[in-house]
Length: 202
Ligand SMILES: [Zn+2]
Image (cartoon, rainbow, N blue to C red; front, side, top):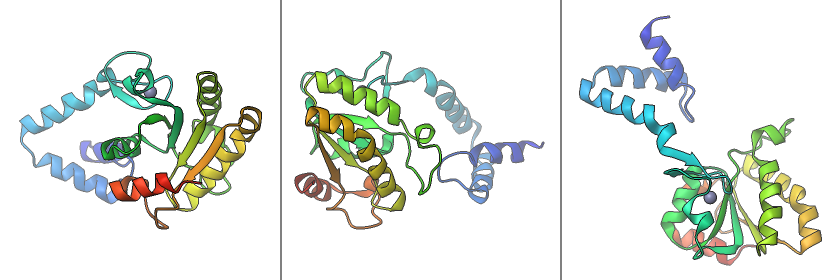
């Protein structure tokens, strides 16, 4: 296989990149300075070593260790846990500075009629982590997924799966998203929208 096609094949595996965009990226990169390409290759090559996945919230953080700073920090509000789809959502929520509790990254959304939900998202991990955190004072889980069919389907599935823990421990399960208009991706929310959605969660 020729180099350009092989590179395009790699790029088309990236989220949100189709075959056409993948080819555009290849030719864009081919036109760049060698220094730029070397820098890019270096950053990509060491990403795995520089970032660790937190054993509690499953987000990627810079540095080494089993848990991230937010999961370990005493200044985190450990009574609430915000369930998000992906790391980018975490970054956006964090940046807005209106939420100070724990997080959990599901790692995906479930299409309607998904046959293998336990393989698509970290649902087993979520149940285990919730059980563990209840012992340490967790009182509420806030599900904050995109307001679209996949997001709603996933929210329903998560709610149903956590039902038992909810009944047994009086855990509060709330949904975020009513403050966001339909079709809104969580990652595009601004500070006021998120603050409002947090205030009116239910
Ligand atoms: Zn963490």
